[in-house]
Amino acid sequence: MKLSIISPVYQAEEIVDELILRITQEASKITDDFEILLVEDGSADNSWSKIKNHCKHNSHVVGIKLSRNFGQHYAITAGIQRAKGDYIILMDCDLQDNPKYFSLLIEQAEIGFDIVFTKREKRKHGFFKSVNSNLYNLLFRLFSDRRYDVNAGSLILFTKRIGLEFLKIKDKDRLYLQIFKWLGFRNTTIEVEHEPRYSGKSSYKFLDLLKLGLQGWTSHSDKLLKMSVYIGFFMALFSFVSSLVILVATFIGSFQPGWPSLIVVIFFSTGLILLSIGIAGIYIGKTFDQVKDRPLFIIEEELNYEG
Image (cartoon, rainbow, N blue to C red; front, side, top):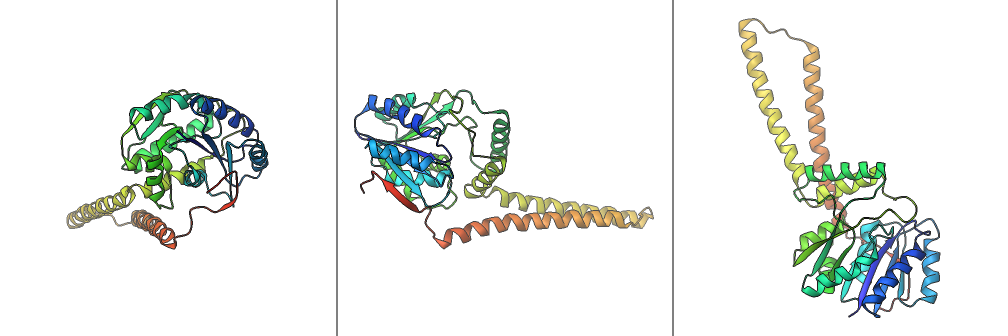
């Protein structure tokens, strides 16, 4: 059995050494035939230098350097494309998901599950990261047709076949957990402990999470478009009822015309129109990006990889 462990690396020079050490300790308990694919996603620090040094002295480490910062989900896709394992494990480089759970993931896979997800018992984020994450999760549930588990872990295992099916998905907006959920197949979930970040701070800020949320809402759901239709319908209904009220008030002589109310109605309705156009524009823009058919990522350099 060959095992592949993929971890996207961004601004993590202080973590790389410990990451490789812990992965090696746990993977070697399972099999001698394993590879650690570290996908460097355009970091501005010395992450790639650290990876290169390990590749020189450790044949288990495969270094993949992207030409720029494409994003976590694209880096993961690059790793899956290069993985050769019968089983493939994805994990973040911050070590908040402990490699000690590798053996449990393998146990579930050998039972017959194609995908093994993880669920974090209790998140160990800082205050602001927790607030950002909770707000993101709330908005995702509101604006997406898909259910999203707020405690879903980044650590997952899947078979080689699932990896090949994943690569068939050519969506430009990639949320890897949502894609794996969409694929179906036989899957299960195990609980893991979420540990504090080994070093540094998360690279995801509120605006990054908001952008990811927007990708999720528009990639996996047309709920925003439907909402604009519903809003338009109720606005039309409100306008019709208001017209009847004004008409009746005019006949009985109690209607007091005024510019303020008219201006408020105009601004309100115009705002809703622009909102609806903006929502439609987002979907049109996504279609434009998709039909350009640009590569999802570009690999600048590879070490210890034999295609």
